[in-house]
Image (cartoon, rainbow over all chains, first blue to last red; front, side):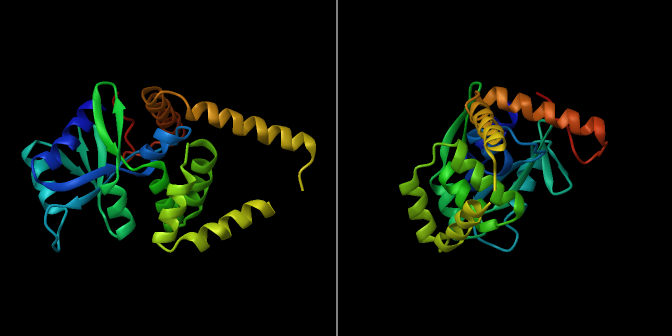
Length: 168
Length: 53
């Protein structure tokens, strides 16, 4: 996995994208109990805005000998899914990413507060479960989390989730 | 409505999850791969790759 992370870490350094952060199941696994996942989800901010922001990544991967596989790119045996920052919350999450260390490699990861907010915004059943797990198991800074909820209009949605939990 | 026995079970489960959350990241990734292997043994799906660690 360290080789895959090294390749990913190199992509913004080469100017192919502006910035990235690991999200999804692996980011969740960094903060909470391990969850079954198959893709390494990478949120990224494109180097240039345009219609096909994924094209430079696929081109770079092809040059390095990594092949596409379904909606992912197989990097050093790991399916990596590149997801453009599709809204302001995800863009801010990438801009405020934290660092994780895997063996000798450092990589950017979405912080627990942003990860919980993204899960809340996405809102599927498994995302709501993730919000709860992050609140129970990760060291969430509630001041930071509340600020994110307020900034992105998620405070009411979070109140509803909390209410549901208390009723169960 | 939960009784004290079920509350104790849920409390223990929460404690267990918190313990797992504190594992080193490298160990957590090993567990993810173990989960992938278990899932693959139950249902083969060529799109779902067991990660090579």
